[in-house]
Amino acid sequence: MMLHNDQKNIQGTTVIGFRGGFIDWAEDESKKYGIHYAIKEWSRALLKYCSVDNIVYLVPPSEYQVQLQGLNRLIQENRELEHKVALFPIPLGIQLLQKSNIDIIAMHDVGWLSLPQMGYIRNKFLKGSYSVTANCHTISYENIFPRFLAMGCSGLSQEDILICPSNAAQKVMSSAFNKLNGFLKEPEWPDIQVLPFGIDPARFRPVDKMFSRELLNLPIEAKIILWVGRISSIDKGNLLLFLNKILPTIKDQGAIMVVSGADPFDEWPRIQMQLKLWGLENSCIRLNVSDSSRTHLYSAADLFVSPADSVQESFGQTVLEAMACGLPVVVSDWDGYRDIVENNISGYLIPTWWNQGKEAASEFFRFLPWQSGHELLSMALTIDYNEFSEKISLLLEDDLLRKEMSERALLRASQFFWNKIIQKYEDIWFSRYGKIQATPEENYQTSLVHTDIFDINASDNFMKSKNDSSIINNSDLSKFYSYLSPNVRSFLPLSSFFNQDDTMLSQLAKGWIEKIISE
Image 1 (cartoon, rainbow, N blue to C red):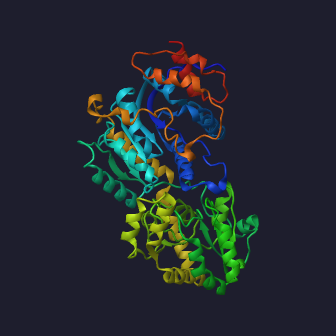
Image 2: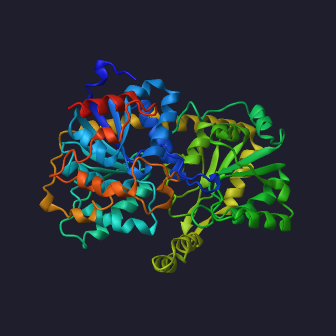
Image 3: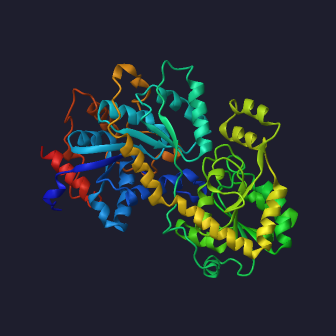
């Protein structure tokens, strides 16, 4: 494929995307977590709304092929991306960037665990006065502690940013940094700011209720209460306890409960068995739908509920999706939900508090496997199920109230549209551009952060590629490590790894490769 001359001169403002977000991490829908959706939706929004000239993704070599396939699917949907986005395996991408004349505005990752690696790459290889930023998703799992230590001594500064989706997540991260100050000598932590995830109004919007019910084979006349979320008493909410408290009331009102979401610990069969013992099996059904049908699922319902009681609930994406589809919401007054729902306006926040078991649960938490620890902490949390039931009944009975709250939910959700959220990211990146000075290498401990630079989070199962195909085999890995040595440049010819006629490569990527190979 021939390239136009202007495609060979890659220049202009550029955001470096670290790791990419173009993989369906969990092939089994029943095992998907919220982070899988968040990564994909954020990546789509960046490509759609970011105003910089180029977006260049650096991904672990083991994920390169499958990431490229995912990105190519997006390019097929929007051909304009051909000239704006490129994706390269980390070591080769670094060399390409070093030889380019682009102006890097920021380096960003949709997950925060790679902040140390990004700081290292900026300070050692892609030197520049731009910030590195990353989204925080997980705030409670045990594997984050070593990453905290690495973050404090990896050359980051207060101009770099850890972006939390909620005030609750920011509080957790700030507390962790403060506690770790005694473990490190003069640690340099990134700034911590709050920016929520967003919603795409083209995908999540109200559609005709009756049509949606017919499409999904749901009862036409019944009032429908919807839960969309992980079925997990371990790290989401105790659905069985919730159903026990709520179903008798809504049954008397002629309503049913629809449950949709992953079941990572196979809890649903036990719930079904218990519902039969209670004589409530006809009052609750499980219905899983594809991503493309989620708007119809929300639109088929009359109201949305989520009794989350887990310490890992950092935001509440499904709550926001429901509101964007015009549903009033009734949710626990907990963590990220508080930042989304305006109590008594766009929904109801149900009183939720720590009970007397908190102190003991917190002590045991650190010694238990993560599943047991999270479930134990959830047991130390109390939700006022009586008020939960009262608010649900009120909305089921009062059509006018439900309509008014629906309109206010739509208005509230509009504040989270992705175009507004991405603009806030750009404001941060440009406001900090030019203020960073690379930390001298002798001032930070690189051995903590560079050893896994080519396969970030390879130990995390959900980040591993399921696709064995790759442009790199095991014998090549040592060569890639050598690639980053200051004394070794052009150790391998780029042309041996990239075929410029590869139809999966964007025009931007092809132009870049052609330019570098020809030099």
